Amino acid sequence: MNLEFSPAHVSFRAQVRAFMQTHVPRDLARRTYVGAHPPLLSDYRSWQGILYRQGWAAPHFPKEYGGTDWDALRKHIFMEELYRADAIDYGWQALHMIGPVLIAFGSEAQKQRFLPPMLRGEHYWCQGFSEPGAGSDLANLRTRAELVGDEWIINGQKIWTSDAHYADWGFFLVRTDPNVKPQRGISMLLVPMNSHGITIRPIRSINGGADLNEVFLDNVRVPADNLVGTAGQGWTHAKYLLEKERTASASLYANQRALEKTREIASNECVDGVPLIDTPAFSRKFARLAIDLVALEWSVLRILAAEKSEDNLDAIVSSLKIRGAEMQQRITTLQMDALGLRGLRDFEDADPDEIARGSPFWPAYVPGRSAGFLYARAATIFGGAREIQKNIIAMRAFGL
Image 1 (cartoon, rainbow, N blue to C red):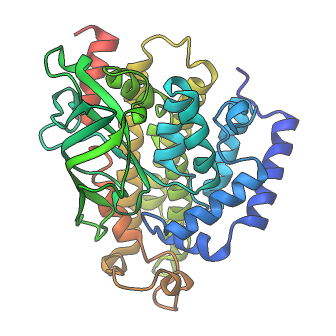
Image 2: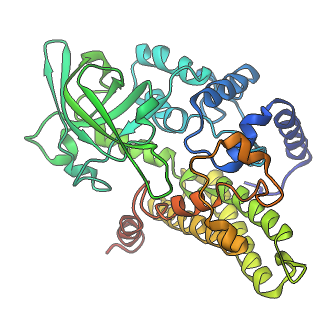
């Protein structure tokens, strides 16, 4: 793949940028800029509807399922411009995760039932994988599902379930056969989150957010048709899902936007009347991050260009995950360094629209930075802990 932008790609970028400037609601962009996480459900639904009407609801889907026929560079450009405009990265769990799994393994009835509402933003999804004692090691999960007549009866507990408190649906890994090899006894079920027997308990995180949850399932009944594929294929589905997430795991676009925010902060914060961005100590740190981020971008583009033929792809993707997660921590740390004492202000109880408009002492770039810094401490844990990623690299790249 030629990684140079052709005139057609430059024109496409101008088209996408113009669309974002015209269609991203200003109040939504303000909340995203501050770092409201998770986004307001109303913001997600309205923005996804805008993308759907434009035909851009899920650019990475096959065209027959509502996607586009864009090449890898166009998809890359679209994501860069979406983040630059402070829009919402469309339904992560729905369109990045379970959507591709349903396209690959779901029944035709499941595709017709679930994909169109995803594209329109009508259904919000959550992922029920991790459990107490089975976080990154999903083979040890204990949540059970038993087929009784034409229903699955589910019992167990999930943890760290992002956005479960306002999700319409969840995709859950459950153990359907305890008598076989652990990976072969796992299945994937689609579960309405308003089902009788589901209890959701928020987990308050260090950044003040409560988007993480414990989910308890007590004799939850779902139709047999809610099984994805066939029983015992859940491990295969999970691996495919994580494989589809592989370039996204580098958090490239979020890191690019965060570095631009860092530049903005450092251009306005001064020491002895000199903007931080012009001081030798700060500019060296910023330049190092900028260089490393360009290297990360090129690594992601190489995967996008030849992801099916690349040797040791699992190891490469794990390397990108580690690099991207550490980049989040480095960038948010530099932001806090630039803000100094002002970065210690807690805006947890403030109205996001009010703080986003800024004030003389609290410019718009201050609120949300401390929360982002604290949230990034978990970046090397969620989505597969750094230690697990290093084990994958050791096994896949070096045969250890």
